[in-house]
Amino acid sequence: MREKREVSAGGIVYRRNHDSVEVALIRSRRRWGLPKGHLEPGETVQQAACREVFEETGLRGEVVDKLGEITYRFMNKWTEGKPVRVFKRVHFYLIRWTEGDVDGHDYEVDEARWFAIETALETLSYATEKKMMRRAQAYIEAELNKASERRTALNLPG
Image (cartoon, rainbow, N blue to C red; front, side):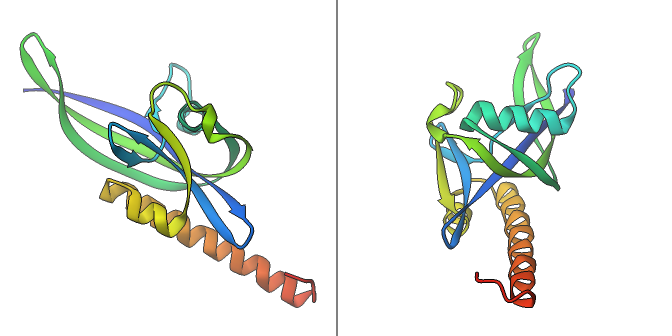
């Protein structure tokens, strides 16, 4: 059986919404997931993550950190009458929203929507993407705790 390796990149976009944090998910073919896609020629994985996030969600942001990678395999294309086993590695980044609207997503997805992180964890269709979301949640919570401690130390209002 023929084998093929693919590299993709994606991101978890988040924003503060009053006292909560929201993340953007996409729906495609009745499954909710994270925006991701293939690298274009000459593109870094981080550049691809930002481009794919924009294309699939309509959102732009600032990369905060790399969350990690997931790998999986699947049967995909048929070449010369034979199936191809694809080994895929997806690099994920945490991205702080700066501009854009989820209504600006492209034709590749059916819907893009903001969710509270806990709701996103329940909504995501794939266990590996839930793992990335938990990493993002831990990172964001740690950053919020640091900011709260700084405000407390300086006697600033929350």
